[in-house]
Amino acid sequence: MPTSALDVVGPSFLAVVGAGLGTAVLWFAAVVVVEAIVLTSMQWASFGRSLRASLAMNALTTVVGFFLVGALLALPPAVWVAGAFVASVLLEWGVLERIKRLPKRRSLVVSLVANVVSYVPLALILFPILRQF
Image 1 (tube, rainbow, N blue to C red):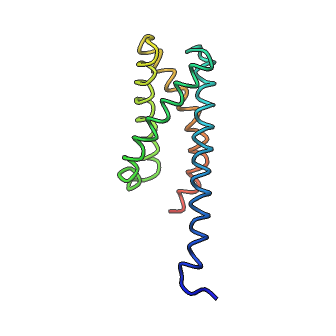
Image 2 (cartoon, helix red, strand yellow):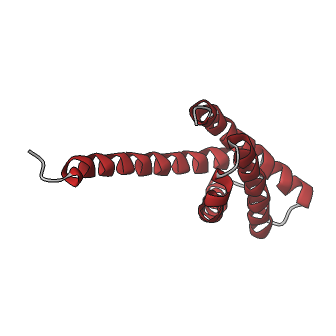
Image 3 (cartoon, helix red, strand yellow):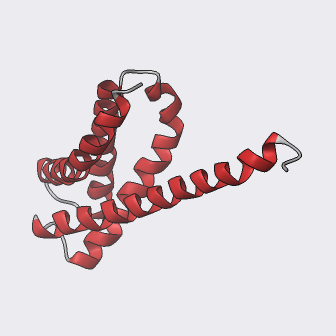
């Protein structure tokens, strides 16, 4: 017989947090690889260089996202996803510009396409879930 509520809730909470963190890490890795494939297919660079650029782009947007998440989650889901998308495109465009000097418009298009490819599945997964709240 449990001696406290923590005995009952604690292990379940840790399992949920662990599953959530595991899912986030897998999603991050998948986005990095998919965006690297997009960069390569758009002839931005070789796959290895695109993979490194994608990792740098997504690391930056993840760190910035941690700081913005509290403010954005107070908004309706469509608004915060759109805001996150725009911020991601602009930040990743900047990373692409720093790594490889191309015409600014070309780097912007590459960033835009890479983000569309990664955000569409995310939106399709999240919107049905978030509508309930």
